[in-house]
Amino acid sequence: MSETTARAQADVGRYVSDAWRDRYFAACDAVFALGAPAIAEQDVETSFGTTHVYRYEPDDPAARSRTPVVLVHGAGSCSAMWYPNTPTLSAERPVYAVDTPGDPGRSVQREPIHQPERAAQWLDETLDGLGLDRVHLVGTSYGGWLALNQAHRGPDRLASVTLLDPGGLEKVGLRFFVWIFAGLFATFAPRALRPRLAAWLDQPVLIMPELRTMIRTAVRAYRIRRPAPLPLSEAELTTIRTPLYLVLGKRSLLLHPERQRERVPRLIPGARAEIVTGTGHGPQIDHAEDVNRRMLAFMASVSVD
Image 1 (cartoon, helix red, strand yellow):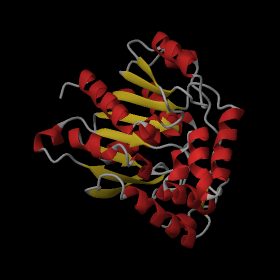
Image 2 (spheres, rainbow, N blue to C red):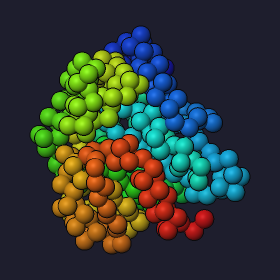
Image 3 (cartoon, rainbow, N blue to C red):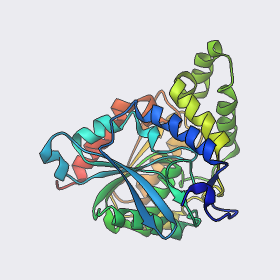
Image 4 (cartoon, rainbow, N blue to C red):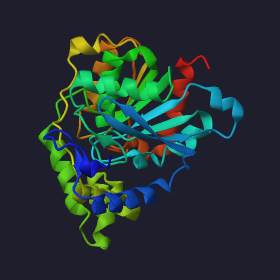
C-alpha cells in the first residue's frame, strides 16, 4: 500500500500526492549519494506501518560481527541526513539507518507512534524484524527523544544509546521553532546571501544544494501530523541503566547545553555528556569526523565485541 492511500488520520503523516512523494525521493537519493552506499534496503512490517531501513556493512569481515549501530534521524527528515556519518561508522560496524514513520521518507505510517509507549513498541518491533537483539542506538533531535524513550521503556536490546543534541530533555521552546522557520525562509534567499545566513543560523543546509533541495521538497511534499514530544521527567531519567553518551552543540537552541551537561550525568548513573564548540543543533553534520570518532570510541568502551 502506498503512503498516499494509507488511512487518513489526524495524527498519521502522509504525502500530499504520489508526484510530490517521488520528487522527494529523488531529492533524498541525491543526498544519499554523498555518503556511503547502502548494501541493502529492507521494509519491516510493524503494528504501526512499514519501516524502511538502509543497511551498511564494513569491508572487513571481522568487523561485520560487531554489535551494529542503528541510526534514528530527526523530525522532518529521513535517513539521508546521516550521509556525513555512514562512511566512517560503517567502516567499523554494521549500520542500520531507519526511516521513522510519520516523517518524510520511505516508511509508510498507518497508526500514530508519538505516544511514548507506542514509540518504544514500534522501535522494538523494528529491531526484532531486522533480527537484531543487541544494538548501539544513535538518535538526533526527535530521533534523540526516540532513543532516550527507548532507554527508559524498552532497553533490553540496547548495548548503548548516543544522543546528538536530542529532544526529550527539555520542553521544546519558542526559540527553537523560530530558528527552524528562519532557516526554512532562508532557503529562498539569493545565493550570494546564503553563506552568511548559514553561518548566522548554524544551518549548513543553506550552502549545500542537495540538502537545500531535500528540505524544501519535504516541506511541500509531506504533512507531519504529531505533537512535539514531552520531555522525560527526572524520575523517568533516573530509571535508565543503559550506557548513555550525550553530545550537545554549544550554540544549541533546542536545549541548554551547560545545564544538560551537568544534569544528565547526575540523574543517569555513568552517563557521559560533552559539548561540541562551533556548532548548534547539528554537531554530527558540522563536525562529522570529530563526532564520528567520539561515537565509535564510546561504543568500543562499553561493548564486549
